[in-house]
Every structure is written in structure tokens, then in C-alpha cells.
Image (cartoon, rainbow, N blue to C red; front, side, top):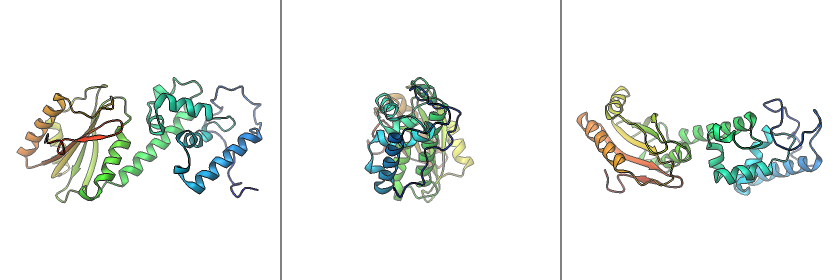
Length: 254
């Protein structure tokens, strides 16, 4: 008998029905033994080997198990990965786009969004109230987690104190697929409210290419001038792409 027998496929789903497209079982019927065995083996591999022991589609299966307790979720997992590229793309996909996928309903969306929220909160906890210089890689990882898979542009500001400790991270605006409105006056006003001594600007490019536009460069310069006038340092502007980021300072743009 498996030592992981405490896992149960009979747990109550978040919603009243399964969402997979296969023909439904009679209410209350147990999942076929081959499904129970597959789920038990997958959970055991995850607990023994961790996430690295599983490809994206199997990790996604583990998430879908809770939402769809009595169905084979492998076809749906593969379909989601085909549509949204990778595991991160699936959990970060907008709810409206997820609803367009056959077999995806509110229970599946809820589970995916719980995973996304947990990932964001964990990544954020690794950088907030920590010195940016000593946690730069964690900061980049957080920005990638929070913004790389957004389908519209988002502009965030990281506020730092005199010791370059991150004291606040706030989204300032959302825009379209290729534009987000930013107002330098509002940026420096918020910095003063938080008693911040320095800033890092961050925004994403939904196209996946982090190359800054002329509008990005002009807006950054306007914020730098406004911040300089009040003794606030603009350390950097990060543009987050699909798989990499670009630093204005590293590129000589700041």
C-alpha cells in the first residue's frame, strides 16, 4: 500500500460539478482506479522529487486535480499549455481568456488564480523590506513573476529609503497592449508621501520584446527631471519582456 494513501480523490470540489468535457459519471461515483492510481503516482513523484521532477503538463495536472476530481485532466493540461506556452503563462492568463477554453469553468480558474496569487506573494516577500543591491536577482524574479505574462501594459514603482531598502511596491497604471499612461507629477508626489529617497520604475511589454520605445525613453527622462528637482534618485527603469528584462541604466539610457 502506498505511503501516500492519506491523499484522497474524493474531496469536495470548489463548485458543484466537474468541468471537463467528457461524459459525466453518476453523481457520487468514484473515479476509475486507473485515474486514482495515476494521481497517487503523480503526487508521490512531486513529494519525493519536487517540482523539478515533473514537466509543466504534469505540474498543471496537480493543480487541476482539485478543480476536476473525477476526470482525466491530462488532455486539458496539454491544451492549456498549447494555448498559453508554459506553466507560468497558464496560471497568469486572464480569466476571460481561460473561459474561452472548452472544459475550463470557474473551479479551474479559481485554482489557477490561487496558484498565481501565491506565486506573486511569495516572490514579493523575498524583496520587500530588503536592500535592493543585495537582492537584485530576487527583485528581477519578482518583476518577471508579476508582470511578464500580463496581456496589457502595467506600470509599477518600487520605492526605496535612504539605505536602498524597498519600502513599497505599487502599481500606478494599466494601459493597452502597447501603451500605459504615466504622469511624472503623480510619481514624485507618491514618493514624497512615502518619504522615499529613490525609485525604480518597472513596466512590461506584452509583445515579449523589452526594447524600450521612444515614448518609454521620453517618459523616463521626464520622471528623472521631476525626481531630481526634489532630491529623489531614479536608480533604474526596468522593462519586462516575456523571458528577459532590459535595464535602462545597463543600456546607458539613464
